[in-house]
Length: 129
Image 1 (spheres, helix red, strand yellow):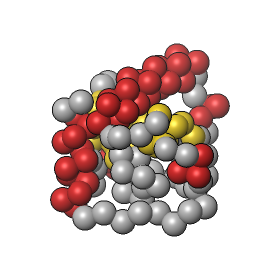
Image 2 (spheres, one colour):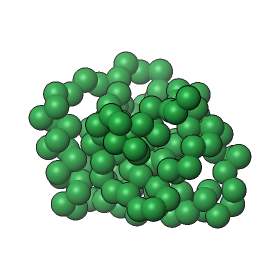
Image 3 (cartoon, one colour):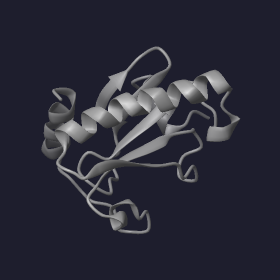
Image 4 (cartoon, one colour):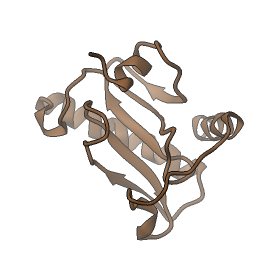
């Protein structure tokens, strides 16, 4: 069964897509820890990050770096943090979270809720960065 990320990649369900190429896609997390919380995902559906072949793994990290620079320019923060949890969705992915202190990347915190308008405004802000 296709993961929710595969459904976003194939446009079966909508996503707030920041950037994509043939191998990777980045979109806003709809259950964010912070404004601008972004997920970076390989288009190839592999459950565990460290099961990715080396070429895709390195490509994913390079793509995440490019996206993180955009997020950091667009969202006021000290820096963009990186986390790989891998338990929520059975599809390898990297979290990019704008940080001002270490607790901003605490995944046990309640997730934020934003309106569609807020997500769209954040998407536009990052894409224009």
